[in-house]
Image 1: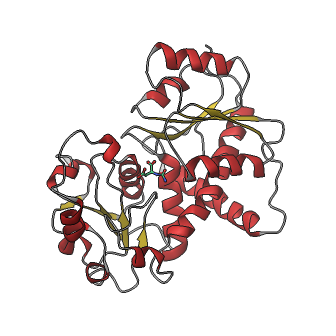
Image 2: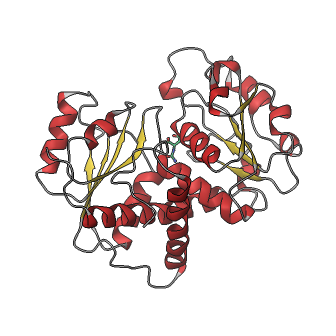
Amino acid sequence: MTFTQRHLLGIEPLHPTEITALLDLADQYVDLNRSASKHSDALAGLTQINMFFENSTRTQASFELAGKRLGADVMNMAMQTSSTKKGETLIDTALTLNAMHPDLLVVRHPQSGAVDLLAQKVNCAVLNAGDGKHEHPTQAMLDALTIRRAKGRLHRLRIAICGDIAHSRVARSNILLLGKMENRVRLVGPPTLIPSGMSEFGVEVFHDMAEGIQDADVVMMLRLQKERMDGGFIPSEREYYHRYGLDAEKLALAAPDAIVMHPGPMNRGVEIDGDIADDINRSVIQEQVEMGVAVRMAAMDLLARNHKARPREVEV
Ligand code: NCD
């Protein structure tokens, strides 16, 4: 067993061999998901609870589908209407849930670090489905699987991550994962949307889109995270699209076989031209969604195996 984690809280603690082990298993689940009978008993008898304290379409749907395809009992808790406060409230929620004996807890929360905190209070495996601006590990894993299948490898690729880096947990998890796998990662965006000191992460920073995208093998576009902005980070969406939106003219500067990615939800005409997003010869956005289900199946399968092998390490 090369995957030794008890939780999937972020990419940061993972060893490259653990990333590869998870992606290899996910490849097998892609085959299962493409077959007529999409069912396995890997999580039979186990209970999965999804707690989304923030809106989600793809991530929540794919975690739910992943659990059901593996035979788990899946429950979705409607958290949007409840308190998004941290501290006591979150811990109380965790303790309440823990008393119901879940085996897998999938959590999305607007505050960075909230999911780690929760993981310390429960006995079961916790999966981070996105915490604030911190990490979104299954998104980085599904992006990695999409890249590996499209390019035939996951190393020594030129990957441009473009747009709102500052507010993006997707960018953070991708920077960590792609760096661990020895790719050349470039960050492209206006100075207001790229935190200073990013070069410590072994990435190159570009404020000029044409330079940043030049000869890239992978162009990953990010949404402007307006809900996490508290002021004027961009002059206007029109100006932003002109300088940093991916259109045919800018994409022509990337490698001729470059793939275009976006984690969704997309803002067409803000960070990406709709025609590029829909171009099946360039865009792998739908593949990303497909890989998302397989990656989440693999992650939950591996964590459940580790908990079965070493039960109840954490005492509450
Ligand atoms: C992302 C997220 O929620 O972090 N979406 C997703 O999970 N597919 C990116 C975003 O919201 O822009």
